[in-house]
Image (cartoon, rainbow over all chains, first blue to last red; front, side, top):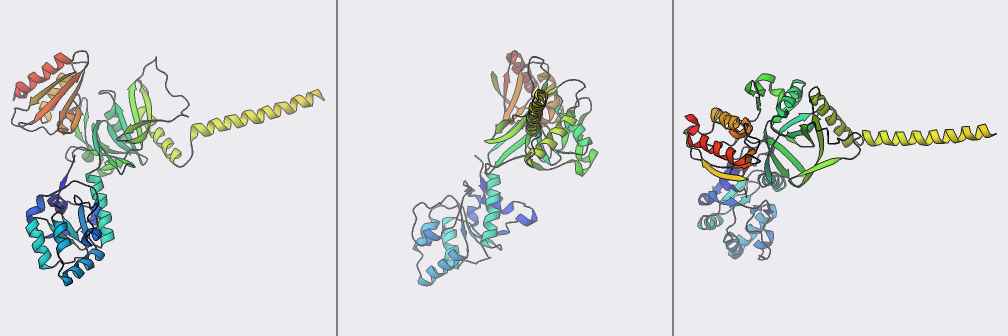
Length: 327
Length: 87
């Protein structure tokens, strides 16, 4: 299972709007503490003496409420619950609003080897950013063999055996203005059991591609920065396979196939490959079709309904003509 | 299925050229080759995959071959590692 140390939490480089703005003010000995839970605890109840069901393994966030309660306890000189909280080996305590705890609390933290961090953010913003970050860190991951491209805004994962033409298909798609996320190895992450996010396994190697006969090429250099993307939600899986004449392929497209990856179902298409079949165009069409489906238009079903309607009206008309003839 | 644990013995690790050798050898066989390092499992028949492993000097790699000629394939790959990819 993945873990994250407090030091990594301090060091993590997030985009501007997600910055945690943390600094360590005490308990540096505990910076190697590991966070093992994606939970965040607000220790109001433990501070008041109720330690049942206390999430001691989680990061403790002291917001305005906790801070004023701690100040009140300190005025009374009652350190019992604070000491007890620090004895739980909590990974770290974080004070929001740049709150500066008293020297006594810093001493307790130093003695128990618990880092005390401070952030300039307000509790709600900080919790939201931290939840998002912990969700990403503890997300279940899996590495699979395939190519991930973004086609008309749809994340399309192309899978298939080695040599079936995944990379060549992706290359043609990029040439047509779409974007590559990763070639060959795609790292999947399950975010909150809702989103399946794909990215390159290694940022150094992503955006490179191996094309048989040419070798390894850097797509960002060849096609420009507009041809690449860091990560993308996977919304469609396209499995390429050699045309098998004994197998029957979907001709209407009314039933949707799906494959479950890391517990998330993704729509799946099986596309047979044969010389002369233009796979990139088929994938483009599939992506457009998928967008339509997401907007509520289901081409195949609508087509079928129209056919049925036509039959009905035709039958009605026939009935009418039959009656005409009889009279 | 044949599995073997191999150690990277050449100083430079599995960079582009050794990766190409592994893939070249692997593609001579019909079986599937998977290479596993820590929690990463990649297809041994693709160069980018093998490089992505980031297998440096002394790193341990578990290979697993699956298919009709799995035994020969595993031996051939093991030989490559033993020869330090001719480096």
